[in-house]
Structure formats: C-alpha cells, structure tokens
Image (cartoon, rainbow, N blue to C red):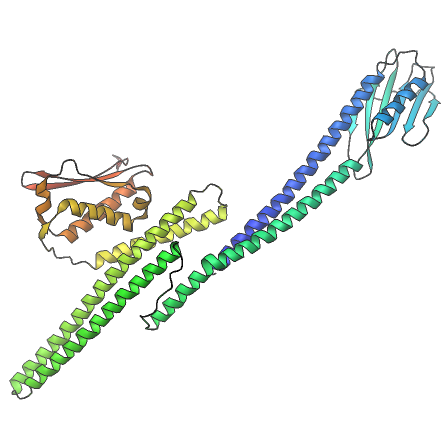
Length: 453
C-alpha cells in the first residue's frame, strides 16, 4: 500500500468519523428535545392540577368547565382536557371534556371505583398527540383524574429541522474533508515522492548526473537537497576511481613493455608483480568504496534525525486521531531502527587497529556528543547529553590516543546511558587529569542496576 493510499484512507476515516459524530449528535439532540417537551407538558399538567385544587367544594361542573376552557385558550399545545370527578357514594360522578375546536361536554354517570392516587403517566409516541394522566385531590371529599392530551407538532417540526441540518452538515463535511485531503496529499506528498522515486530509478540505472529540483524548504526540500549532495559526492568519487584506474592501467602497461625483454626469471617475477599490483588495485578500490559508503551513511543520518524530530513534534499534538498516532509511532520506530543500522555500519567501516596521534580531548568530547545527537534521535529530541567542562585543563588538548576509536567508545557509552534515563533525565560526560592518567566519566540520572541483578 502506497503512502498516498494510506493518507487517503486516513482522510476518509476522519470524514466518516465526523459524519458518524453528526448522527450521534442528532440522536442526542432528538432525545433532549423529546425529554424537554415531556418535562414541559408534565409541569403544565401539574400546574393545571394545582389550580383545580383551589376550586371550592360547592362549585358545580360549569365552573370546572370554564377553567378547562381557559387552559385551552392560554396554552396552544393542549389538544384536549378531560376531568373525571369522583364524589362520595350515592352522588353522581361527572366527566368534563373540553376538546380544542369543539363544544365542551359534561357527562354524569354512576359512581365508579377511584383510580390509584398519585399515578402519573407521560409518554411520547409517533402520533400527533400524547396523553398525560394525573390524579387531583380536590377540596372536600372529592377526588378527580385529569387527562391532558398535548400536541407533538412542534416537537416533530423541531426534530425534522434538526435532521435536515445534521444531514446537510455531515454530507458537506464528508465531501469537503475528502477532497481537501486528496488535494493536500497530491500536492504536498505525492509529487515530491514521485520525483524522488524517479531520480532513484535513474541513479540505479547508472545516471549519476540526475538531480532533483528543490522547490520547497520543508522536509521534502531538505531531503531532495541532501540527495543531490550525495549524488555530487558519488559523481566525484566515480570520476576519481575512473582516473585512478586509467593511470594504473597505463603504468602497468609501461612496466610490462619495459620488462618484456627479461629472461624467464624476470618474467616470473613480473607475473608475481602483476598479481600484487592487481591485488593492490582491488584493495584501493574497496577502500575508496568503503570511504564512500561511510560518507553516504553519515549523510543519511542527518535527514533521518530531522524526519524523526518532526515526527515526535507531530506526536505531541493532543488532538491526533488514534489511527494517525499509531502510524506516526510506527514511522518513528522504523526511523530509529534505520539510525541504529547506519550507526552500526559506520562502526564497521572504521579501522580496528589503534592509530595514536595528538588529540584535542575537549573537542573530541564535543564531537562525540554531536554524533550522539545525530545518530540517536532521543538525544537530538530532548537535548539530554551535555559536556561538563569545569574540571578541564590545557593538558587535555594534547592527549596521545586514537581519536576514532575513543570517539566510538564514547558514543557507545552515551547511547547506553540514554537507555537508562527517564524522558526528563540527563547524561553528562567529563574528563579530568589524574597524575599521569586522564579519567573520562559518563554519568546519567537513571535508577541504576538493582542489587539483585
């Protein structure tokens, strides 16, 4: 799967997430609107019930009818009000019905069993109205039940409006995010990667004159600039090797012509000499290639450290999607692995036999710290490694040692110390003179090795 495809998938995932979140928000909004409508209707029913409790015991049904009509006129949400009045035994009971848009009706009927007092029911269905039933304790020995039907028209209208707004918003966001991500991917990532891949194919085919145009100053621009510098060094090294081979071939040919008249012994010696020269030429070419490979590995380490640092900065953002954070962490680990490979390869290209020479030790310590920053992205990212120069004196600037081997030993010690410290820890390297010796120390703020180990 290509990088462009992965970024497209991430963009589509983000857009779908936004669309799904719009649906969830719509569902929550619907539930909130219905709940608020239910609560408001129940509060209105309780207010009507409390008002009915103020009617005197000797009031007739007409007074209750007028109150119900007044509630209908004041509250447009009420569709119908029914009041069931239950009197004592041998006293007729009444039902007062007040529908909206029709004449009220009073019906008297025989005493019935009273419903359970304190019973309240509120429900909302798919119909145009919903009932609320409430027990009312009137003055005197009377009991009543209030049934209020309230319209759902406003609730359904608000829900339909919210659905349309959420649907339009979700579709617009989905299309906009997908198109915007595609354009950004093609412009910012796709074109630079295609140019770099094409240049690598040309170089693989033997065209060392190929160069990548540097049009930006971002990571791709720095990567292209580093790639061009690497190709320039390769071109110069290739030209030097070709010239050396030509000079060597000419020298061998001249020596062969000069020794052609010698006797058999000299001919045998000439053959041995030719073998030695060919072996020497092979060693020289291998040495040049090893030096070239070491330079190439060093050049790769710098852009790798830059890319790793920017990945770590991206990971510090708190609003990253989990899938994008996982991708960035995988990329950071892979770059860390490549840095270790480059560091190991640099180690393998250095000679193992000590080459002692006068060395400026403080400067070598600074180089070891800088090299640790270059090959270990943790040090470059956190600035953990420092040099303590308080106890140094001038004798340290004329130390006889192998600077290459000592530098590598220090880099290995600093890298191992980084593994033992916390994210906010520190590694310090220092050198002091003790009589006829020089003591180099590497200290870290880690927890150390447990006593049991």
